[in-house]
Length: 115
Length: 112
Image (tube, rainbow over all chains, first blue to last red; front, side, top):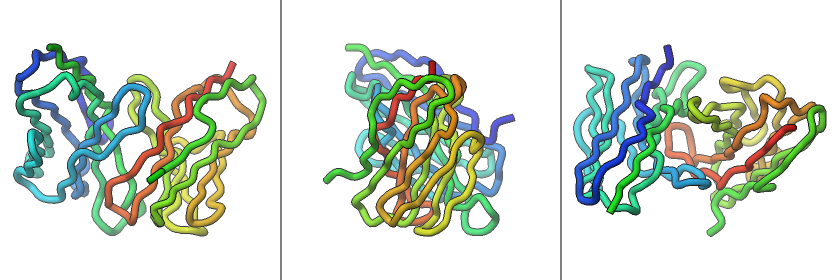
């Protein structure tokens, strides 16, 4: 079983829809959670970063973390065609152990927003 | 603002050939990483360097070697390329552990 599971999709929605992207994880030591956006033939770029349970909002994007359920989500409101990309969740452990500082990525969800 | 620069962007190799992928960052970051991205597998860590002078294996290090030449540069070497190493390779850097990464634009490598 992978440490981080993400539904690869693909997910296709009409412009203006609310999009929900999700990841589950098995390692309770994960404390830092991130979402990356990757356009076709480009490197991933950091979208959102959080280290606590609850919600964090940035414009049309909301990141949600539920540590008790080991579940994180990214919501996109009023989705636009320019949001079409692959979205990757990523997480890392806090200090201690041999794996700290290194991110573990989900597989990525391919999102298409059509006009 | 260049960020993370990877060279080359594309490369085709024959089985058994060797090559070095170059990566340089201009953000004065301490940590650097090499990932490979394959369909259905996501991003997998090959090697990382937490700070200048140190390197460590990641999830899939077999068949690769790395060199942290200085704080800016981190290279990945394939000594004897195999078709299983056909992939897109990404270099990344971060200010310190647990911070978000800045990725390069990738090297698309095909081994025939």
